[in-house]
Length: 289
Image 1 (cartoon, rainbow, N blue to C red):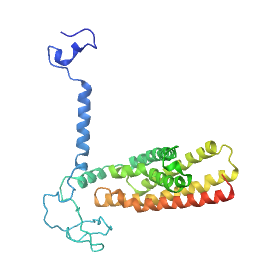
Image 2 (image 1 turned 60 degrees about the vertical axis):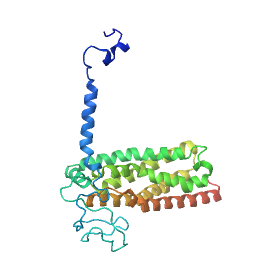
Image 3 (image 1 turned 30 degrees about the vertical axis):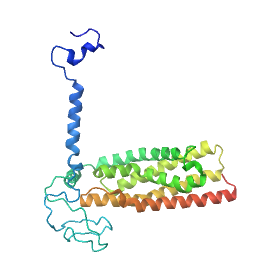
Image 4 (image 1 turned 135 degrees about the horizontal axis):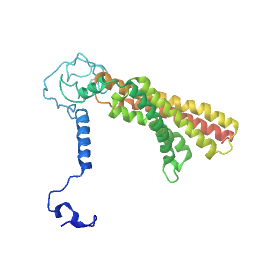
């Protein structure tokens, strides 16, 4: 017999005389879960794993298909043949016609009209990327961390690596998981460069109000000109890698590989670190803050 106390153990379903009454929220959650699985099933299948195709016979590569090692276009070659440029044996090939998998999923997503949504995503990436980069930089500079053990190491190594990675981090995450949300390279550039500009603005406010409460005019001008140009310039370099990742994914209908963008990101980090090193020693020599 059920208790009048709503919190009594006697109100548990297995103590009731009749069948348990289902929770409406569970039905809603189940429906949402089913929709999500249907939406992403083909896009996250294992069909593109090495040697997972049903037909493993040699096939001609009839579309643009880049070598995983050097980027050489393997179109017109037989799958399994060494790359003429670097000699690497390709592990992945285009999906067979009509096969369910990532390429079919991406092609379906690209067929939908999403140009306006792409600009909304770019704006969201700006609003998230800038603050995220600031938070990451502040966390790396906390007392007691390895990065904060030396101001020089923080300025030359850890700071540039964290900042350059996080400024493009939101856009990179979108490209890796949902590349179809961006419909043009200009949207990606807007997302990353805008995030860099927002990061530079927030960083300048922190520097000129908290770290240096009464900064000289020279420092104010330096921060709002040279430092802003530095952040935007380095992010522009790092974005070239993201564009290469996105471009190959869209044109070849294959999974994005963020590793293709590492050379550009590394270049941006080195440029940023080199500037910080030069500025550090020059300011120290001149006795400037």
